[in-house]
Image (cartoon, rainbow, N blue to C red; front, side):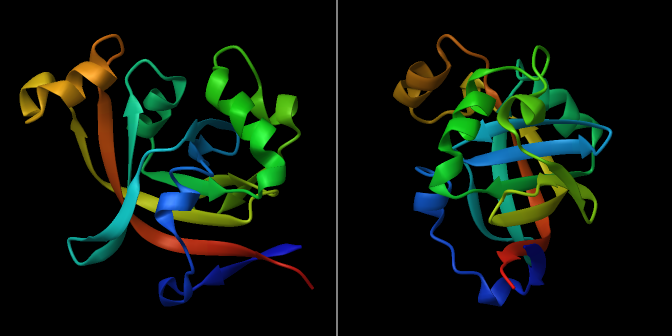
Length: 170
């Protein structure tokens, strides 16, 4: 099986399902030095005249420094059979574990981003914007209290979607 680069206009994607309930791996870095984490928050659309993907990373996550230091990141989506791998990547830190080795995932380079051979779909993004969320920006105090009373805020990243890859079977 190989990845095939797709036109964004051909993408069949339900972000509420694939981001919110199926989850994805957010990855930044180089093939030699990267980190990945499971994410279930984010959105897609058009921003600044380009197709864009947005995600958030808390400052205490190992992936945070990789997002800060690298221009590109990927969002990799998997079949349900990889749920346990995504669960592992979302509950263990790359500071303590080699997540690819532990889960059997195979890191690969796609354009300027790092993804995994086992993914079914990969979105490669170039960072365009990053902004730290803070308590004063929330118009709903209940939202801040629910999500950030015990954990640090997210930094929001918006990336221009520069490529989309889907797995093809020959």
